[in-house]
Image 1 (cartoon, rainbow, N blue to C red):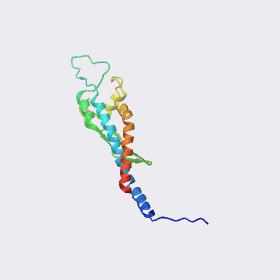
Image 2: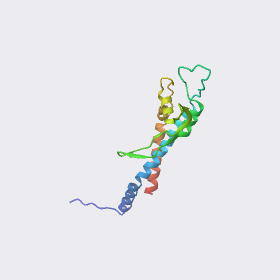
Image 3: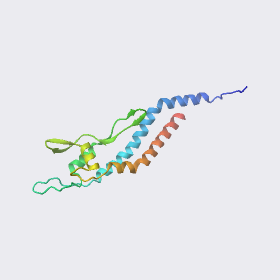
Length: 162
């Protein structure tokens, strides 16, 4: 008959596993937010690189295509950029990097939503030239964000296990 013996380190091993289980949501949160910070910083650089145009057309003919944003819209995009609260959606922990709030440009008496401006610049409209700044930023930072998240997870695991 086979014999199975457990060494004295099993209690420490079980304790470490229990601690890791309890800390998993915290570890995931730290890692996801650190990755999102990298992406957000790159999106911010993209916004800073957007061309600024004069949209005061009084006495001038309006161009058929706007090739950028005005200064107030750009400032609104920079101020409204942020990271949303984390959500657990079917076992996947997500945060969203995006725009919030309104800028101070009034269109027909209403202020413009920063998310609407970002979407129109990113995708283009019938009067605004497409100038992607979000998708390229995400593509450029994907590997760096994944690496940073892995580093955070490894560091937190080592802290708990040791």
